[in-house]
Image 1 (cartoon, rainbow, N blue to C red):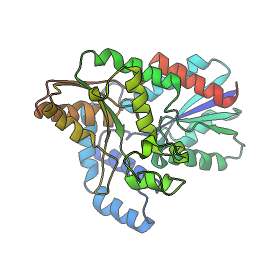
Image 2 (cartoon, rainbow, N blue to C red):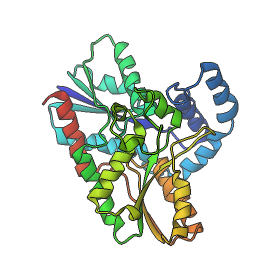
Image 3 (cartoon, rainbow, N blue to C red):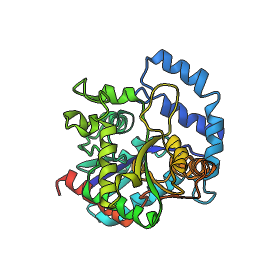
Length: 337
């Protein structure tokens, strides 16, 4: 019996301040997320972030929380896991875990006890230290604590997988229609994360065209992988350069983050004559706070306040059948079957 562990980032148990505070404590306490000396991270977390941010975040979660199914990210991730289990058949066990929050990674490995191998798929198309690396490190650590040996095979990103790109394109196409412009919005990360991950020490963000210049750094460069994926999606949709753009969302803190910022792009488009816009979020595979609230509500309001007329958010792949088949194929390739 082979095992497949799907790992998404995580979600609070409930959209209430104590639950959000607990979730943020775990998430932002990760040294791969807030990459600073432990003492400074503790001070920032406990005296700057946790006294104030949980209330704002809980208010945002309440806007997108479904009274029947709860957290959108957890709901869609569960549906994906169930659909993948049906797709791969009886030779596999499929389990879902969250890097932060519940269900935890230990619970996921418990559900796959006895499976050989266990394929680990972090549900992040592009590789980043704060997502892929953190998740795999946590899985390895959890496996090392177990009395029963676990044979792990990790999948590190799939931003140019042909099936994933095709699924993204076909998800976007019906919504795009005759819209003036497509914005491909990726989750942002601090610029220092990109520079730290650069194995050459001199390529990433060193020039305006660094992502277009071939380099070994691209294998681990989050920005380059976002740019590559965005260009592939736009090309498959047949969009000229003036009908699409890419941007980065979810900034936090005062340090420089990858840009341009999605909020700035959306606010500027109406002044350039764009009255109808479609936004897709290819760094997310499941709809969540960052897609439904940050883009679908806040982003839409910003675009309309700037003079835009029509705003449409493309749903994430969630449990789309094409995406389910991609996950099954990635798992089979990793398991050697």
